[in-house]
Length: 510
Image (cartoon, rainbow, N blue to C red; front, side, top):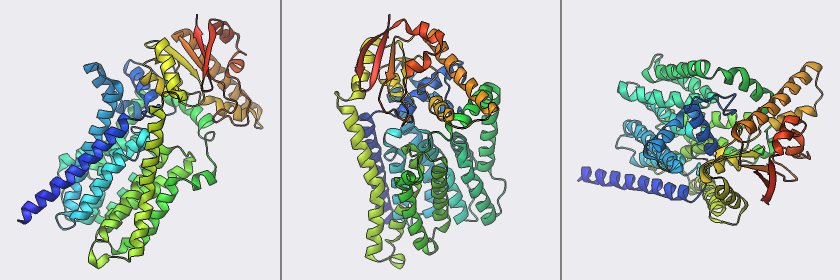
């Protein structure tokens, strides 16, 4: 009788997980994919064809994100299918495999005694994987979370059960996933180092299959950069350090008002309340360390972009979910006020998901808003052709690529070098710094001229907003700026003004 009851519970749980996947699929169908992912898919395609950073995709990200986006491209080419659908199926499959791998550890960790905690954890994982990112599904930081989560649970399980031996093939798979995840955002290697030291102290295990696999993946990844993309080290990275890292920063008050910080504070509060009372202290500690490292990286990089907040919100939500489940046990039950407070705090990520899903749905479903008008106009006149976009953001280029089915006639999705150049021009520089800045400006001009000559874009979209993003307080005209180069002036003679849509002037060739 008990076995039948357990089987019924398990079926019910997996049906709820299936419902989460279904809801996520419905939401994804009705919203735009990430603009950055749209650009990264094109960059990955250029990489697949032998492209390089300096000539084909001058992006700030190291190549791991492009490696990880090769499978949906291969699927799309193999079946001649829709790239957006191929990408989303791929992400859902990776998320499901990660969830199944997590189940291999939670099953050993909780057994049949704490079925509520077991089910709550896996259900929250499904929500965090597929619902929390909303339109940022497939972005670097949410992707990192999906890939490293089995490793975190492996650490928690091994720290909990000191005599437990895990199957080597399972740990190789976990190490492969985590190696890809930590390499995707190298800043998260801080978390890897902290957890390794923790497990060494807890169990005196130094050489383990998964940790060796992570290190091996990282070494092969570094070798691939030096062998195949040395221009990222020699050309792109110096530009990133000089013009990018300190340019797109948000103020500390803005960061303090973020969902990420509120989520971490909530997790911190209940971690203090609940950790020492828990039967699963190692797991609580692992998730708390993950949330803390995530929020420190978020504050240190000073970029409010939502995808940077997702890991902090995700790990914090997992902690709060475990707290709620644990407090259903009579010996640990807190006051009703404490439980209500926890539920209210968990409402923050739920509200975030609902609010972002609704706003993104409105954006895509309204044919009269600016981005939809641009997509329609460009697709009707340039489908299958090249277009160029003068903007400091990846919008609209990152959406034009998959939705208007055009090629981007540039190695930039957004001119990320420009805000840094203009900022540096207003600083007090010594002669050496001025020379370096002039070289960077000349390099940008050269790349724009080369891309115009190479791609001969059918349409050119120019941001003419009076207040441009990341150029606040600066009156800036793209065409006037690049017209200081006579080569650009000559190329621009081939273009005629056509129309203006949503602060973008559109020019056509010929």
